[in-house]
Image (cartoon, rainbow, N blue to C red):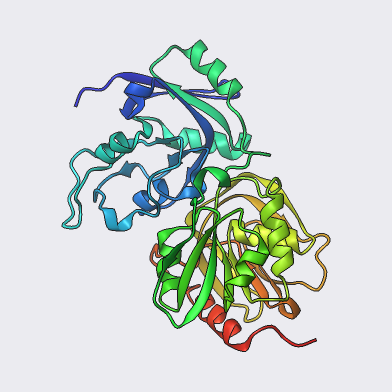
Length: 362
């Protein structure tokens, strides 16, 4: 198919040539914080993951769209990412489950994209320079460079407010009762939790007293986008819940639990976005191959009475913590994901066991 020439310009002025795809023609200029994802498959789950709000996703795998898309694999009600960058966007998918091509889905949901980009050079540049704002579109280089320079970083922004639900909803059919804080929760998480509990999914701003009034057996803190530091409301609610009900957190939920326990967070150079991050489980010495998607991480400085349970073998990032006396634990990675290994699914069973045991008496 014939496409319009387009450019991708990073905030530091670096230029990449490509062709307009998705909804880019109608948008003309799209901006966001550029990150790269190293997954070989699962592009639909990546694009529809609310944790990418505010970001432009560059896929390192060269062919995106080979097996099309289908509604079952969507992780949220719509994509929240700001754009997609690929080397080769496939226009003729082949898979019996496919009901729509990737590009048709991007157009339908208004997601800009650029194809034909040298994503290998782009990835190497971001590894050196770090994640940064970018602009892509069919305008001139100077116009796009100005837009990239003016585009906001995710640091200090409350992106959770853009993705959380407006009112509580009920999901699942398990015997336990779990309140799920929706900071940008993925459908895969709700499926795993729904197998063991009846879920009440609540907005991110829900105070602790409303949660406790539901008399849950446990509270789940979901994944979500952006910087945890400005989320004072959720951190305060989690602090009020500690020691009163069992808590399990994933990704952003892990970071927020760490903040509620007195820790700090910081921004990684280019984040963890992919499906093959090795994580050591310190209790057993075993290594789990994990799916990850985060630009911020937990600094354990200031944490009291907290155990570090998992560590990233690539760069030493804290991947899991537990506060046994408060009946809470969390991991930075995504045990609900299914890129091939299911190494971390045991964590849902641990949450079920924690709910059955309840909070330890002091």
